[in-house]
Length: 227
Image (tube, rainbow, N blue to C red; front, side, top):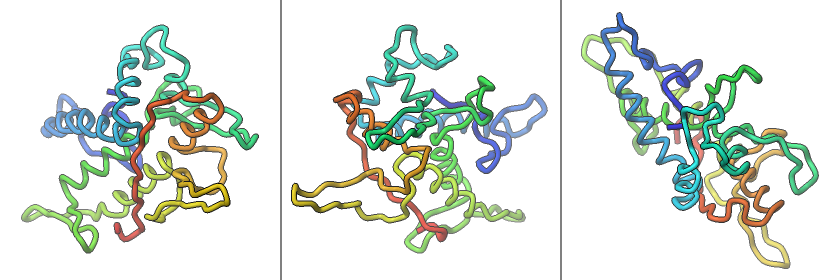
């Protein structure tokens, strides 16, 4: 696994995600491990495609500082740990990585869009149900629950922005020219931080077939009502 329970903090904090000796809810930590194992794979397959995911996964080594096997190609380090580069338009941009440091230079990787993705499904399975009218809440008898909906939506929107781009539109970004029609998976305001999809698209433009087997799905964003 690329991430661990330490990633669930701040806006995506999950109580008792990290087990304590004095904690009487140690099962939560075990549940999080299972969700990480399931949804990390799910997210990366959908974002990279099965073939590219398998190529990438085969290079991972969680015990190493850079997260990769010795001798791995630089493209895997760039994908996992980020890269500052000049894009095809001549702009200096930054892909922060599938994982990155919340404090730059600390050497501690503790941020990832994977955590937002997993947080969304954790809350969905434990406190929030999604129906045709948006989010509803489940609540135990004789309990008081804080509304998690804004944080759940915020986590999804953050995930969406990092992976695909910032637009809330659910339609394809279609460009029509005299040369034909193309779909822009990465439509967003120009920004020094680029999405995963723009990073891969840029790398494949700069050096043909850097990530030759990339086959992503199109994600759909949510508005502030969870729809």
